[in-house]
Amino acid sequence: MAVSTARTTARATTRTSLKSRRTNRRLAADAGLLVLAAAFALPLVWVVLSSLDPHAGLKVQAPDGLTLDNFDAVLTPDITFTPLLNSLVLCGGGTLLTVVCSTLAAYPLSRFRSRLNRPFLLTILFATSLPITAIMVPVYALFVQVNLIDTVQGTIFFFAASQLPFAIWLMKNFMDGVPKELEEAAWTDGASSLQSLVRIVLPLMGPGVAVVTVFSFVMMWGNFFVPFMLLLTPDQMPASVSINEFFGNRGTVVYGQLAAFSIIYSTPVILLYVLVARRLGGGFALGGAVKG
Image 1 (cartoon, rainbow, N blue to C red):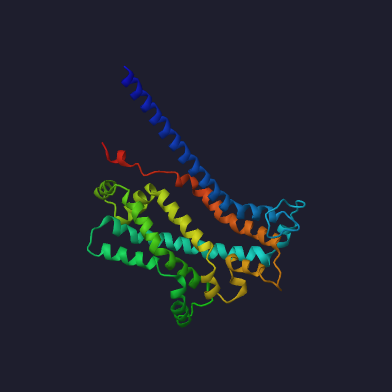
Image 2: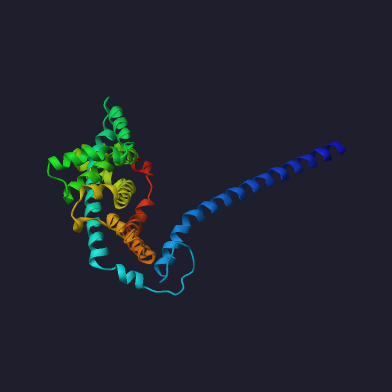
């Protein structure tokens, strides 16, 4: 009886010790996540507070008084409206071209088996690892030869080309989740491959298209180097380049206006994410669609 009681006590002690260790580990993990969250949130807090502070500086501090003068100063055609319009044209055109081309490239890779599929995928995977600075010199020389330098369409083409490798990988993975049996049923009814792609595959992989769209747009929206190198006319510069004008202007930086412009500059990306958030929440549970 005494031995049984001792074993029960030992087991209870062990359980308590394990539970205590798990609790400590969970608390340590939560503390670490809070530190990381604070590190990411601190710059955002500075941007919001500085945009409303008439005497903004580099320190994160409560504003001396709330004002919208910083927004009034940057909401002009030369500083904000024209560069934002240029960004929307460049990034919107590049994103549309990327989504269309990646869809057409991913469809045969997903639906047809070939010995060239794997080498092609490995090749475009290698292309994603190339630094943009390493290829800008030959690209610049090529654009000069074909008269695409300082043109909006040339910059759009390069934006799309730089995003296509990773977009093809993403699109193929999402396309693999759509059952091929649905297309075969459409083919039986006389639909072509293009019709089945447009009317069956793309509607079912809406979340995947949304992911590729958001990813491509965000990567283009924040790209400074490409338009800075390929565009020469100031009136064609996007907002990602014009924001550079806030730094080093006669040795001074107006931090309040810089923060206000940063908030305005981030708004289109946030709105795009909000618009496609519902599609991003969709799934690919299509197994029941092929039954019966």
